[in-house]
Length: 283
Image 1 (cartoon, rainbow, N blue to C red):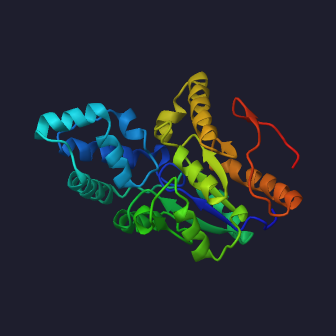
Image 2: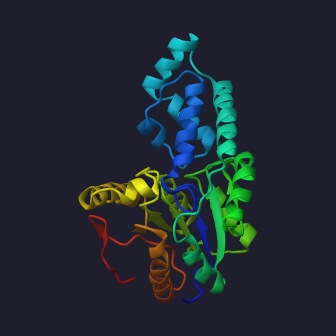
Image 3: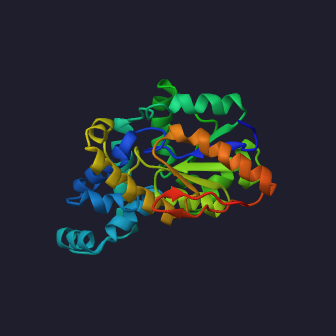
C-alpha cells in the first residue's frame, strides 16, 4: 500500500464499534419511552448518523410521534423537550457504554498505521457521551488519533465540518487524500460534502441493525437481500465504494491510490455502478 491516502476518518457505532449500531437505536427507543412515546424501530433508525439533537428533533417531527406527544402532554413539543430527551439519551448511552470493536477491526487498522495513515473519527454522539465510550473502546483496543463530536462544530452530518476539523487536527490539507468510512447515508454525504472518498460499510450497519449472531444466522438469500437494500441506500447517498465489512477497506484504498496517481490529486468522483457492482472507469 502506498501513502497517497493520508487518513481514514471512521464513524463509530455501526462502523468500528457496536456491530449493528444497536446501542444508539435501543437507547433512543428507551429515551422516548421515558416520555411515554412508543416509537417504532424504523422511525428511530431513519435519521441514524445525524447529530443526536437533530435525530431527536426528526423523530419528534414524525407525524405519528407528534400526535402521541400532543395527546400525552396537551401541547406540541418544543426545543426544551428536545434537550430533555437528549439528557435522558446521554444517560442511557453512558450507562451502557457498549463499545465492542467490530470483528477484524484490528486487522484493518494495523496495516494502515504501519503505512503512516492517520485514524480520525466523526460521530453523531455528543462529547458527553464520548467521554464514556472512548475509554471503554480503548480498553478493548480501539483508540483513534482524533475524535470530533457533533456538538463541537457548527452542524453535524451531512455538513462537512467534522471532517474538516479532523483534517485540521491531523494536519491534512487535501481532502482528496482522506477516506470517510461509515454505515449510514449521512456518513456518505458527509464525506462527499467534504471532498473526501466515501466508503459505506454494510454488514455491521444500522441499515441492517442486527447483532453478529443474528446476522450470522440469516439464510444466505435473506442476508444478500438485506445487503442489496443497504448498498442501494449508501450508493444513493453518494458512496464512492460500498463494502460488506471493513476487511474490504485495504483493497478500496489501493484502488483509490491508483486513481489518485492517475488524476494527480483530482477531487473524488464516483464510479458508475449497476445494482451495487462497481464498474471500472478510466479517469
